[in-house]
Length: 139
Ligand code: HEM
Ligand code: HEM
Image (cartoon, rainbow, N blue to C red; front, side, top):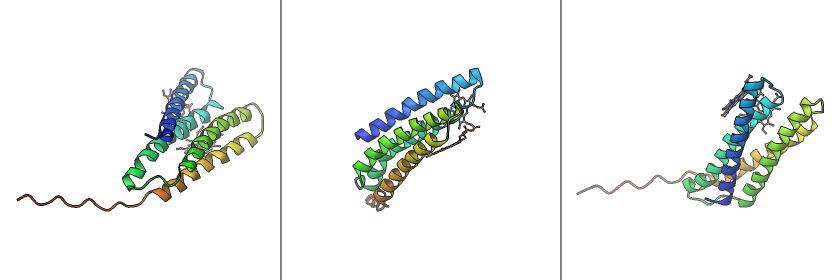
């Protein structure tokens, strides 16, 4: 596995563990804000999306029989998606403490940019592979 895949999977598991703790906290305390959007996005953009990014970077170039379009774009995406997600969590916390939307907006844009980086890299990597040749007929 490439370093990018390993790091995305490591981060995915960490977000999963943290979001499960947040879920249990909410189940006990009933507090929903800012914990609910943080829990939801650590699960959906952290655990699920990062697991998909990690597995996707490993498997989609192999399915295509073509190397990944850009390792640099993938590395930038690894950084941006984590900075964006942790920043979004901070943004929800700021909002719930009476602050403005600005922190949430800035980090949401970084997170969205990381999704665009993934999309570009994958669109440039995937292509239809020729169907495997049929097995020779047995005599
Ligand atoms: C041990 C595991 C989990 C626990 C204890 C837990 C607990 C909770 C609780 C207490 C809420 C607030 C519900 C409410 O008061 O309306 C919630 C919301 C939510 N959870 Fe979890 N959760 C868990 C796992 C997950 C997972 C694995 C996902 C996604 C992959 C997930 C996605 C969500 C989403 C999207 C919401 C927001 C729902 C809404 O907008 O109404 N949760 N969770
Ligand atoms: C760049 C990406 C994303 C941004 C900036 C974003 C932003 C937001 C914001 C600002 C909210 C409102 C939260 C609140 O104030 O209560 C929200 C809610 C929600 N989003 Fe996202 N989101 C993103 C990606 C996603 C993805 C990929 C999913 C699902 C796979 C998702 C599922 C949800 C759900 C279920 C809620 C309702 C959660 C709640 O009630 O707390 N979001 N999102």
